[in-house]
Every structure is written in structure tokens, then in C-alpha cells.
Length: 160
Length: 351
Image (cartoon, rainbow over the protein chains, first blue to last red):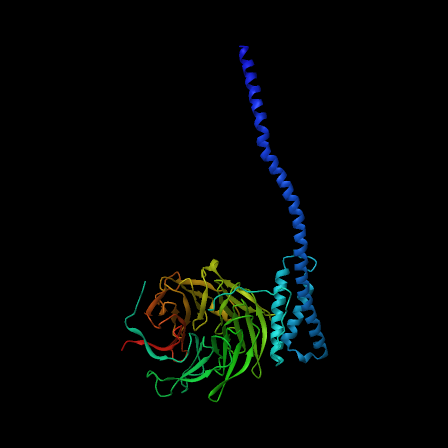
């Protein structure tokens, strides 16, 4: 009866010894994973912030440039309308007024606001409508266009 | 599934040759074919011109169509679509050169009196509203533009409508109400109406796959004579019939819903569809054939059903791009094809 516990204890100490031998090799993978993760996270954070700053600067510049362009156009058109209201048709004047309201509503300090894309799309559409009307009424072939630093390019579909 | 009525036929009256490239689209002048004025047809082509064809006053079914004028040296690329104003006095042409030409007949010639610019790329379609006061255009740039016709044939851009996510293939005004319909490569049909107070145009309904809509490019749409039904044709090989409440629609706008799908009749893309005054639907497809459909008079409780009246195989040597019924001489049908020809057909009983 007494021999068994001893045998058990010997067996236990044997398995414990086994655990100790293999533990480090198992842990080796885990420790390396942990270390790699830590390094990656740190580097990623640095790179992420750097890229975020670059992208933010680029997008911010583009948005600012475009909004500024429309703001400038609206200011000039409003001055023209004030000087001689008959120079622009009621439709054009209405579109200019709507552009002005859109610019005021644009959340320039809140880039994550959901309405930024909608407002920009509406501004672009109204600008096209006004410049199309103006280029018809002036018989010059000059076309008013917004040429930002980044020009959007459409995909080349087949002609149908 | 094929119901061919042996008593009816589509007889080829004449083949109109002259274009040097594929013919994309056709339009009958609505002020002709009546009161002694011989029917007049405009066709537009990849050869950058528009041809005006007219019947000589004497003959009707005797193959007497001549080319009256060629509208050239204006568009610098393919002319994709053309439409006459309701008065028949003006012709609007939509071109891949991103402009729209407005032409007026002066004596025996047609003169381009205005060019509308604004679209970023290929203009695909042009349509006049029922009173001729508004013009709608659409383009590969995914937008739909509405222009107002001012005195002295001046045009002003009223609205630029964004909403489609792909190339817009066709625009059509409703036959009696100023509500605009557009169909696109994005598989949807969009309906645009003016907001009563602010005079702003916006999308009031989209007919897409969730509403039993098409599962591929919608190429064309056409209304029945009473304006309460519409047929659409698609790359998904089906024609779909849509309907609305006639009274409510005439009051302004009422939502449209899917009524019926005609499947199994076409095995290639259906490029064009047109609903005649008499209620016959003509389709032109990529298999070179023209098919005619009509509503089944013994309608089922579930809604209207349609039967194919006849199929004209090899109507052309290549894809049929456009089919158009004449609205005054209602048995005349014109078709245009990639083979560069226009054909005039007569739909009648076999003698």
C-alpha cells in the first residue's frame, strides 16, 4: 500500500520534469508571437500615424481647394447679380443661392460627418448646371471647369 | 410559349441604305404622316451623321422612301440618339462627342441652331417632354441633365441629376406628366420628378432587383398610349411590364410596380422596345430579330399577361439597335441595325 504513493510521486515528478522540458519550447513560439505582435503594433502605429497625416493633408487640401473654388465662384456671381440682376436668369440665380447654402452647410471641421460626400456631389452638380447655362448664354467657347490637383478619371467602358 | 398568329405578318416595305456605319437610333417626326404630309423619319449613325428620310407623296406601300437630307459636319463622333420635338420643328441629336445638337428645318435643309455642352463624355439619349418645354439628356458620365427651352430656341440647364451608379442608356419623359424616367447599366430604372415647392428635381423612385427589377443592364423603356403602363428591355433577356395608378399619375406622381415579366422569348440582349398606339410591343434584339407582343385580352386575376404575336427572324443581317412605331400611321414600323441599314415594315393581316 505504501509503495503505490511512492510510485505515484515518482511518476508525478517524472511528468512534471517532462513538462518543464517541453514548456520552454512550446512557450518559445508563444513568446516570439507576442514579441512580434508588440513590434508590429509599435511599427504599425508609427507608420499609421505617418500615413494618416499624409492622407489627411492631401484630402484636406483637395476638399479645401474645391470648396474654396466654389466659394470664389459664388462670390463673383453674387457680385454680378447685385450689380445687374438681369445678367443671370432666375434659374441660374437660384442655383447660385443653393450653392451658397451648401457651402455654408459643409462640415469642414468634421471630416467624419456622413453628409460630406452628398454635399460635395450636390455642389458639383449645381456647378455644372450653372456653368453649362453660362457657357450657352455667352457665345464664347470658353468652358468653366473645376481643375483640381487630382482630376477624376472614369473607367474606359466600351462604346454602346 | 411561342404563340404565333398565322394571320399576321411583318412585311418589309423598303430597305433604306446610305449610312456608312451602324445605325443606332430612329425617330419619326410626329407632325408628319398626317394631313397630307408624308411621313418623315430621322436615323442616326456611327458615321457621325443623321439622315432624314421621307416618303414621296404618291406611294404608301410601294417602297417610295428617299433620303431628303444628311445632317453632317457638326458632330465629331457617333450620333447615338435623336428625338423630334412634339411640334416636329426641332430635332435634338445626342452624340459620343459629349454634345447635343439642336437642328431646325429651314427650307429643304436642316441647320444646327444650337449645341448644348456640359456632359463629361458620350451622350446616350435625348428626350422631349410632352409640351416641348423641357429636354432631358443622359450620358456615360452617369448623370441625367434637364434643359429648359426658352424663347428664341435658347436652352438653359435646369438640373444635373446624379443617382445612377453607371452609364445611363436612355431617358424618356412620361407621355402626359412632366416626370422623367431613366434606365442604366446599373440595372435600375430611376424616376425623377420636380419637388413642388423648391423646383428641385430629385429621384422619387428606383426600380431595381428588390422590386422585381432587371438583373442586368436596362437598355430601353417605352410607355403605352395611356401612360399607365411601361415596358423595359434588358441584357437579362427579359421584357418587364410595370404599371401605376393612372389617375394618381396624371395628378403628379404615383409609384410604379412590377406587373409581369416576359421571359424565354429572347436569347440575346434586347436593345430596343417600343409600345405602339394600338398596344403592340415591338422588340429589337442582338439576334437580328424583331418580335411583336400583345396583351392577352383574357387577363388572369394575378395581372396582365402577354403573348408573342410574331417573330421576324433575320430582320437584319446584324444586331437590331432600335425599333420605332409610327404614331400616326400605326401599322408602320421602322428598324435600325448594326448592318448600316434602316428598314420600313408594315404590320398587317396576310391577304
